[in-house]
Length: 598
Image 1 (cartoon, rainbow, N blue to C red):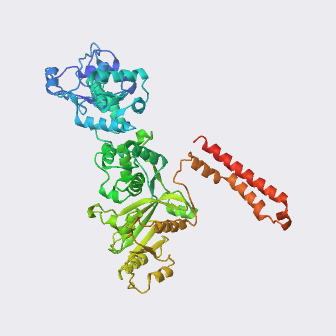
Image 2 (image 1 turned 30 degrees about the vertical axis):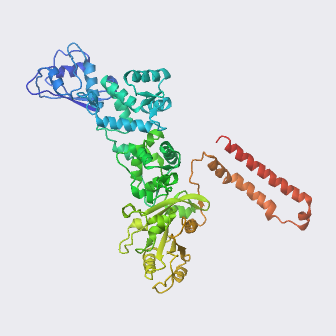
Image 3 (image 1 turned 120 degrees about the horizontal axis):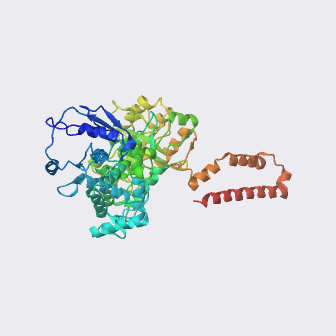
């Protein structure tokens, strides 16, 4: 609701303020004008902008010499309307322009002295152009322009109207149209033209649709939509969010090498107000031989951000325009909040796709090497990492009972006196000790006894630096005996001092052990769209109908008593063959039916 305060300097009285208000309401000139009009609310259907307006007629009166010199001196005065309450002249126009000055101000957008848009406006429109440029070719083609038009104004442009717009740009700007598409310069020129012709509401509509407030800053409600995350629940990207991020990667991977070069990375994050990923990210996810983040590493980093700091993930998705491009209500639509882990354990089923392993160990025990080896880096590669670029996280994909999941390794700082809840919250624990240091194992035993001995979190002992001579640990029992007493797997030998990439066997063992937490619970596929061929086939294989048919076949063929005579009978084997053939044909036909529309 707009509030319009009618007041002038104290020296002018009887200039017609109250008459204007009364004439607007009654649509006729009042013969008797009160000293001050009562507070009036104008309904939305009376005004062109359909905004309810509240009017306070102030007592203070003043006079105005002449308006034009003042307008010339003060560029922030947007409109002067000559009006008459007695003659009913420009009454509605007066209030229309008053509303327009509040709802669609010119000041933040345009500088009259320079006759050009202000830098903040140019910056905002440049981001909008880059977000709308879906193929990142530097121009908005007809499809992109139509999508932009539907997004902002809920209606597509007719082909002739589209050509008319481009022709206007061609006539006024030599580089405004390229390959029959609108360039950034042409896009900015159009909005300058809108503003100069008094249609700045068009530019404001675009800006607000893309999340900008009156100060041309991205609105906090746009960047941080509400998302409730209950305790003991985690946050993950859903299928639609992964598809969007894949399209963003493809959009900027110009050389199609499945990795982002530093230049491509800067181009991707050019729509951000700052660079969100620092050098430590290259030591958190998988990279290629040149140290560039790969496609897998790119998705892994997004998965890590979502898991550790979902609000930051919402912010990042907002900068990329997720809700607009994916046509969702907000970025929160791209986030899945998993259910409580205790419920998963009770039901022996989980839909989670990210599992966290906290890595404990004394200083110099080999924790960092364990994390970097997970990313395929041997000791020689690790020595090139600068201390200030070091990461305490490593994330990549692995397999749990044949299904691809994300495993997140977190190196916990070896401060035994203080371990936060975040240090203890995990799905599995790795206790790393140095086989060449006789005092290294004792730290692992203290951590285990104090924090994990009575918990249900599985633990694995890692005998790191196994390429070095093993020295007896100064402790009451050997590491092997300690593991036996506490029903842990035996210590697993590990070294990253290899010629090639370190073996991933130990991480496979880790995830296999992780899978046993669920007591062979069904771990669902990371894709939960229920639309792709894989999901449809998986749903079919898990359907009650197929389970019933399988059970009956099992009962007939395997469970029922088969005599020696039956085994020698050709009729028995003929029936078994026909049954197996029919089952196979039906299964293949169903697969083809599901595959065809995909």
